[in-house]
Length: 355
Ligand code: TXA
Ligand code: MG
Image (cartoon, rainbow, N blue to C red; front, side, top):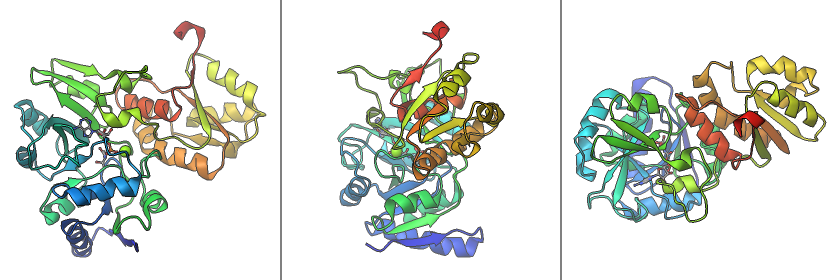
């Protein structure tokens, strides 16, 4: 299939023409990759079972891993889900934005979209082009991240082109996604509590301002045992992983430097660290070009925005072994922690004090 690639330029008339073309493809059952504030999405008409099936094929995604539906306004959620009272409060505080809410599904959404589940995940992106595309399509858009299954989610159109050229009808290039990690996913218990299935741009701390309790699904921070299931089916798959094996090292004083110092001579070594680490790592014998920085240590927004790009760069650079710092678990850093620990297959070196 020939993939149309169109670049948004910020001039409303020009961009609207591109988005109208995208909407036409969605309405007629095709696939369109589009930018959101989190990551690029791979969209199809969520009311059309055949169109949704094409998403699974293009990504190589297991059919039991449900898709998120994207709408442009909170009121539209009512058409596709049985919406609990708390949703209105969430909508007032956080929507549009990087928050996906799982609610009981109405029959209007085909079971292909929800991987056979009786619930549906609903999201309202804050990215203006994404919302305009949904409005122009006149239908909800089912969209997972626009990467091949198992690869890091795309935060640039070039990542989407790398994975999806020839597999989708159109790719809309809206520049870099400003958050860079997928949306926070929560499930409402209907009794003032919520479960956090995947951390993202809306933090656990922010959600705790709305809910009496926010329970973190075990799969967010820990490897599940045999027979245990995550609340979000997608969290069970190996994900975000670069080709090289990745090991995380906790921040206990000096441990990271000690580990890297011992490995400095390993062939094909890459290190993911912070700006402040670079000089020390160079002194330990790591070549500057083999150090990829997530940004300044305190700038968590930049860590989130850069992580997936850096994981892809590890492949481009053909690293064979990568070490990275284990992130903190508070605020947006919990989302960085969740993605990188999955990319590392939970391989973490911790200090004695932390074990
Ligand atoms: O930021 C995002 O959420 C991006 C952009 C494109 O909107 N989308 C995204 O979709 O990350 P995807 O398919 O890559 O991740 C969706 C996650 C999967 O882990 C899936 O299992 C879970 O959401 N999910 C979807 N529907 C669900 C449901 N009804 N119950 C439980 N988990 C669900
Ligand atoms: Mg994904």
